[in-house]
Image 1: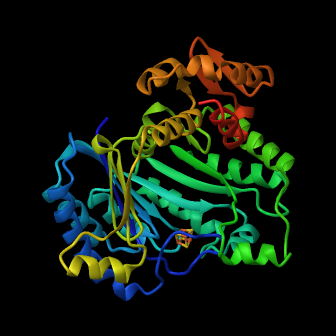
Image 2: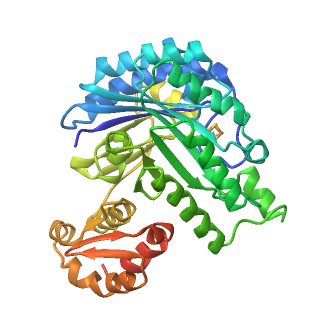
Length: 382
Ligand code: SF4
């Protein structure tokens, strides 16, 4: 599989209450960031000897749609200068409502963006306000409509569910509203409380309680049912595509342990040939300083051993629709995985959580809802 390029754009107009991704609200740092990014591209291109052409460029954040289209175009051009890019490069721009209008969306398309991923999160204004989002539901709908209007043919939307007090009907109303806009891709995440975020602190003070496991499972099933009935492929625990062609090419790289060059503050990269994972300095200042001093802005790195690679392959594989070929994975790591895992896999099958087809173990929809716990059960027998 071809390698991919991820670029973290660390700016947001305002911080959402649940978010622990690194971003700055001081937008005056953008020009220093952009010139540091150029330097990082040059360094990574000369130091990471990966094989093949990059076929994805994913601008994530943060809020990449804060950038001007000319700045996005400059990033795409620089990537083409420093790296070998495939002709059918997928260029994704994470886009937040409240930061774009029809003209900017059209200009992003001209700048080379092929795929928009819109942070809708909910179509309920009370939910959006609870999450601390900057926009209303109507603004989110407008972005999806405008994106279609300017000619984007690959549009994704993010949805968060499991908001305190949210009923199944409310979650389904969000899903139904999104389906009317026919997005090619949907990422649907259960709200999680990340340590140190305003939402997590409010929860600790007892301001609200989170859905229990039974309700969380019911909401997950309701979302999956609604989307699969509408014809979407539930191809990974949190991801749905209107058809195969709209599966996020970039995300698949993480699940298949492909080389991904991660650039920008707090970005992570992985060099498959060496089993080497690295992560950049988290803050913009540290990132810019490291590059100004002529080095790479790498805060840490580790070489993954067999145990870690096997654990990851199992964890990431079982989160996908096709599951894991236990015989093939066992051969790769020189152990009889099928024999070791068969008894537990058999229990999972009896409980309706998995299917075992020869050596192919895959989770059912019910299993998807409990994927993390299931992987933990299996890991004990590796
Ligand atoms: S817009 Fe996205 S990255 Fe920025 S604070 Fe909100 S959730 Fe986090």
